[in-house]
Image (cartoon, rainbow, N blue to C red):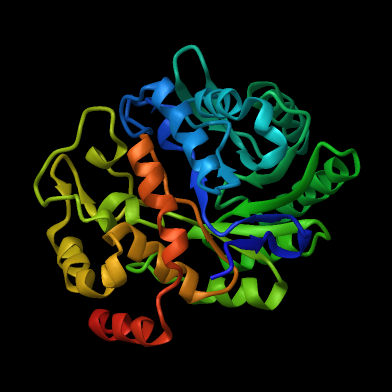
Length: 328
């Protein structure tokens, strides 16, 4: 497999595997006190994990201003340090938060907010530009999104960002952003259990990169989840919002989803892969435009995820076999 992929039509080259920085943001919550993070983190371990990923050839890191209400960006900035020039940073805007109470307090889709949010992100990341700036309001009004796209074009012209994207699971919305010259990607949910055929088709048709969040189905595809096992306090999967399938309120992973993971185990673990590496290999085989961004909280997880690169994509035959097993 080519170890690098191009970020859509931007010409920006990234490693075929990116690292998602939601989990390293640590604990944060919504105004009802519901957790929005993945539980406690050790910032020093997060920094070591980012640096280890760099040593293993990972050059693409995806975060958001709201992850840990600014904390993820700060940790990533600290970890990259002098190696900033070696990497491509993606971050997001659109959610409003209070850093002191670590609380998400709403959304702001106004054109004026884009510049304020970007200025704050640049400061936290300790950089003078963001490589890929992404709208983080998945269901934003398409007409408003067209205005935001125009602001992003201005920011490209000013050298503050190199390209932009929308984080949305709606192909029609993604197509609105794609009308902009410097739109390079769409970030959307996709994994072996949740195929996204319309979005993959759109990315291929319009020359966009397909940045895949939840590539390991929020941990279900790691092979480490057990039905009925509660997760640590502060973990969003314990009180899953409507958009997070595969987990039950206070009862851990959903048995039906785990049964599907189990049915795929032999295919995913072919050629000495771990289940997580097999899940990433499925995404690479699914489309030449995919860039999966699994999360991580430790050096060990960073090493396992990065280890998928050398094993490459699954075969077309294995892809067909998986569709057969899942009945699609």
